[in-house]
Image (cartoon, rainbow, N blue to C red; front, top):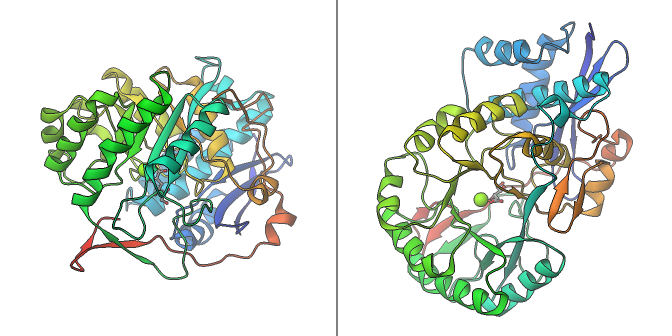
Length: 403
Ligand SMILES: O=C(O)C(=O)C[C@H](O)[C@H](O)CO
Ligand SMILES: [Mg+2]
């Protein structure tokens, strides 16, 4: 048996923070898993090194399911983003090891390719509708078949998803949480205009997506979904917070615009009711925040029964290790829908050399044994952790609201 002899937690900041677990077996085989939880990175690093790593040493790296159950049931305190990100990192690293020992890419171990490649969606954002559409057209010219559009809201200094002064969009932008101002009324005026103009400029042969980022009440979300129906969106994402899942019934009563939810979910129990009641069309839970490949497959299997497809979160705060795992997962599950793709910076790509590739709007994980991704530990050590928080949002009268 490949015995686990060490597991190291590596925190690095090549432009933004990433937490990576690297497991080594007695024969020298290594595997990597992403454990990054944006704005709360060190809590997962501590959970892993203080509480998980000591339990891994000496175990058989082939027993992925048993180790998953051991860490989940054994903690007693189940679920939650910190616990599940830590379990995910172990699980992902063990799949990597299993693939390397089998001499096969992980997607082969998951049943083989169920499609040629995974459709990915790009981000297009700008302070005005015109700027946003110009970026979207450039992404379309690069081959993307699906594009998420976010534009500035007139009267608001900053908006979720829109970069400042043409910079790359990075939400965790400050040493302490920055504060932004939000107005639903102003937002609801601009979004239908954005998509009307986008269809006029870009035609109908491209999938258009939009992230509401949990900001509307159910009835406001129903109104927006209805207003967007003429523009045939691929999805609206996170229309309202998903703690109260009954709320989605109200949205469904008012609109046929498809709905994607789940980037903050960390377990099948978060997604179960939304899926079984057919209140969503895409489930956005990811490998890194939802218990790894093992648990995400379970979520996808449940979703498949209800014709809910996958649309995994893939923002730049998920490392290339998570991206590789997402592509092996996406290539193999029957009900894959789309994968989010925000390209990483050159610095990040250099720290995490990888085999996955992009071609004509599609991505493939590559055929290297395992996940086909690694961490250059020497380079990683040159980028010290830098505290960074996600922003908070307030209404115009100062009331704290959902960011
Ligand atoms: O990519 C998305 O859809 C997001 O909503 C990005 C999130 O705000 C980001 O990952 C938070 O860390
Ligand atoms: Mg989102």
